[in-house]
Image 1 (cartoon, rainbow, N blue to C red):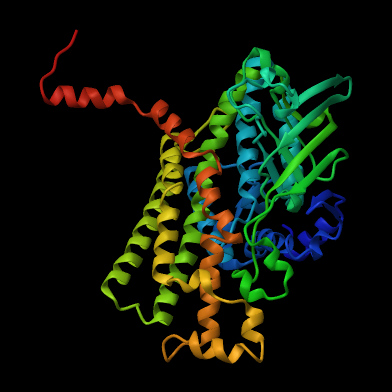
Image 2 (cartoon, one colour):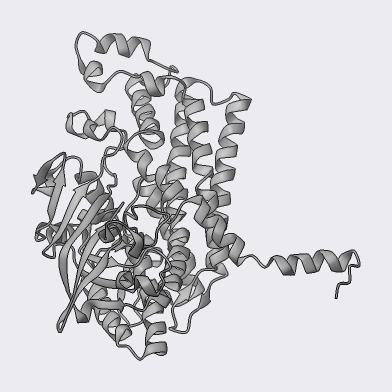
Length: 481
């Protein structure tokens, strides 16, 4: 397994084509906006080296029998699924943000199932190709970026009906040695910190859309791929040289638009090509896995609850009954989320490929609640923090000889707390609930792995409503037909 230092060195060898604020960026590791997100991924390598986290952060490969980072593992049991949830909470608490490796892990496990299924039905060689790729990922301990979400254009239209067919990534040429693709993938979390890109279809496709039914993997710096960095609220604070105003001093996330401009993929890296009938099962299995992955938001919630308790103590309100009740509510909601992610893991099962997958119904229920509860936690944190969370002057003012003493005097809280510490915790709450870190907690909780409507659709599809009706009818004596 790689160390954080080796991970850093591996990224420096990549030659990515990256644009941000209208300019091409070359020294990615030195960029203050990108750096925190790289730190968060490096934390997944650091914690895998700690003996106390060995069980949670690592696993034994079913391919090689060697110990590997759990982010490259193919789940072999219910225990693996449970440890995945525990790993997400652990790292969410350690970083306070998105650590960017879950989507790749979920893509690997999904393809281990789907390539096997296609091979069984069609006699294709996809699974062996995939296993060869997987062995490399495990051996080198690589970060994979799962690329599923297409821009979609007019969402009322299928891919082949779009005015611009490139709004869903598609195959534009078949060659003897591979295929050429064109299009884009949006909202790509951690794209600049990844070694490999795994592309998958984004929706259930029909025969007319078979050119869009494609899955493949390739290096992140493969020729023809361009990255355009997404903006985040308060992102330029990282450029000002005043770390207190950023909130989280060490970690962050990023998203990017990933554009494929007639990119060539050799056959040995193609895992689906025109098998449109398997696009729906692929999407359903990936989303089940990835909805479970939002256990990370429970860890981030732990950080926000800790920050809220701290500001209540600094403000002198921690003993007020309504504040205590609100913090209890925050804990109750956060632990309820963790119960749900553990439940979907415990109720998992083995697929024909031998890979274990979570219970899809419970995973969707969990993710549906993830789209709601963190917003309640954020509201309660802002409530308890008070108005200063949005009116606090800058760190530059605090360091100024003219205004600093005034802020020191007038922003002091309880006798046992310092003004600076009060400012620091307020900035963290601001960042997590409305600033740069809020991207990885609130909007990502809403839209990541599908918006709430997507979970409603799956819940309606997966619930056995007839069985529930049968229970009720039996108890009140209804006999029909």
